[in-house]
Length: 484
Image 1: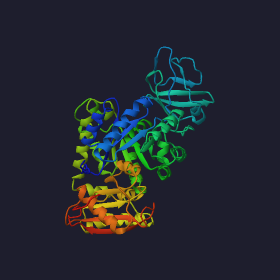
Image 2 (image 1 turned 60 degrees about the horizontal axis):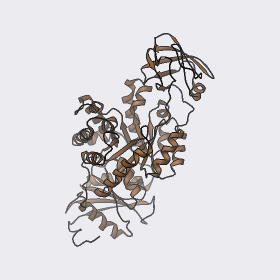
Image 3 (image 1 turned 30 degrees about the vertical axis):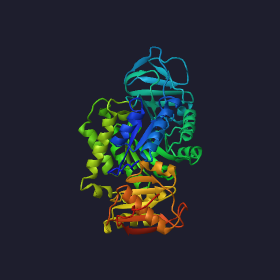
Image 4 (image 1 turned 30 degrees about the horizontal axis):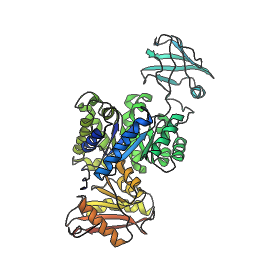
């Protein structure tokens, strides 16, 4: 079939699949509405429920001839209180309330907290946030199986409500036994990306990376203040990062989240890691066919800041308007990127190249396209690292990623400005130039008389050998009589 043309926009759209969008027909609709990558949330449903969704994505990929990205999002540990005699209690501001290891049903004055690790970490003065931050407790005293607190913000507390501990690092692994089973399943199903929840420190990322064993790329979700404090160390070990604003907004005062979001995006861009902004981006579209103006501005701000991707959660997974939500995300991105001031805002973040040949060539390629008015950058890569370096520079033209590895092409779905194509590797300089010209014409990235910039490594087929940049002009006859 004919090649599906590249997206006209640079930022990627990550859509979560769920009850409202798991059918092959709806997945296809979301793709054409603008989804570049699909998220499978492992917090809900059984493994057997996910298999038909994965198969539908891969069938669409084969049918459309477009490498398509699947991200599996691990649940992570969920901290919860126990149950109450009456199902719920009403905590009053100022009263004392105890959390302990006693498994009996809770009362107005106490409830079970079945997580031993929290007792080891808590100190007097620390806050405990219950039910997504609706209730706030302040720790008074701590023993090995008993925490006495004072209620600072009261309200109704019912069975098994969630608990957040923002002021301390909980000595708890980011991967639960469920996560390990889900990770194994994801790798077996050919995951392109695996998102790690509850990241607090670099060691969490290192453990997940060891278990993945190079079979998928790893995205670290930043949803704990402790992770922000060690952000650069985490980014050095992760392949990408997500600003998970839901949990981050519970553990931080809401007014601090925008600045934290900008800090994470800027740091990820500077280090050269793709960054996804997520949670409540078009929240009202769960029930409404159109978003609020504030939500549109929120999405636009993330795009102006240079995020690689923006994500839909319940809007596309369980909402009433999944296709419309994706189309709206696409429309916002197109509008922002057509703004004459967009390019200048993108480059507010200073992305200094490392002292490597690959970084130097990536920076040069982004400048050359403007100097000679080139139509596109084409890079030949095995691992995708060359493409990530070029994308970090936020070039003004499309970036075509040519790779013989399908896994590499699929992982590019979270990378700003990229259009990945799996193609046979090249063996010589002449073959590289000829293939690049044909690909640029075939995919509509350039036409007769226009220049393209090529970035590659010699010898060909050697990972990490990026050492060549070349500018070539198309004649327009490159596809004539070509059979291949």
